Length: 179
Image (cartoon, rainbow, N blue to C red; front, top):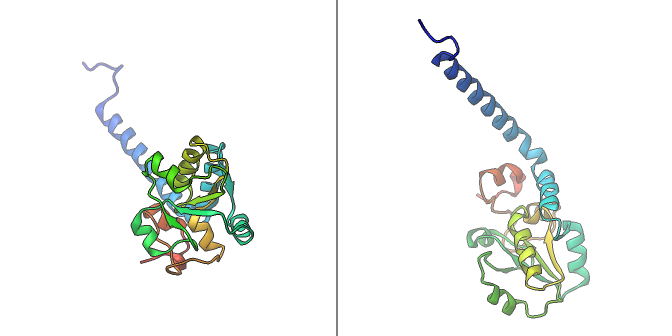
């Protein structure tokens, strides 16, 4: 006789297949949802996760840069991303730059600095680091270079943007994606 309290092995296989199918369906739905909703959703998430960081929209950043020529702009992306295009007058600063080097690059703790990456996560981390180092005017560009380019604001180096990764490729407008 068999033990009726233990479910047969085939039921566990069935449960596993159903679970895998449901997860695959959710992943596919997310993949379809991402192009239309990814960048705004990322912006909301980043404002929540980095609520101690000051975020500015591309329009606010463009107005600030037009009025204040002393604002420093740092691109926190990888060198291959920076090589494709960047905001005008941006300086490439790797995210793993040591704190002492960051202080040398920005000796005035009150100077306004705008940091950006592809979507805003890496730059929000950098803005938080700068605040911890005593910089009072570190601003994170919401939506980063993706949102800047989608707002049709000027880029240097090219008219397209490095997509960063497969998910970034889904969030970036097709006509802005670098090959």
